[in-house]
Length: 235
Ligand SMILES: [Zn+2]
Image (cartoon, rainbow, N blue to C red; front, side, top):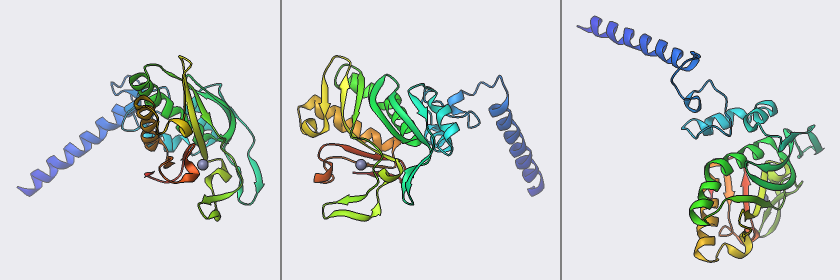
């Protein structure tokens, strides 16, 4: 009995394997592109269980990161090196993501990509549900800074991810109806402000490896610190 069972198992495995290959490679596959692991990430594509994995693949090179972003708001620049521990490798200049403007900033392409995914898949829906309008501006305190990690005791020896342009400090948001919310003033503001800002912070944790909000410590009372590397650090 064992041999026929094994043969059937083997045949079924080969069949499933072959069907899987056809499903992801055939030009007329019914598999949606967002769910196809062989189709590279596009920020504009619908969200799927593969989106985060595709983002980590896309940000391995500047070319694939730019292809995923696919927007004139992100311009590639030459790598920049200030010292052994400071510089931006996959350097871009970015002045917007989706339908939200940013004051132009130089950063690593991975930050641009994560900001774009956050805007596309979370911020706009959150703004419609909580504020009743859309996000037109993401305000920030810049990305690159050649410095150590700041602690309540002073600047530490370990370099901040800002020193590689792989972090950005978000200070607030502007909305299409002219309203604005500042992390400094509105983190403990009215219920609508709190719903949006706390939702923005929480949803950033899906896209960024490390996220710090005003509740973390006094050094973050006026911004969200978002960084790319790391996993699940959401405070
Ligand atoms: Zn920061």
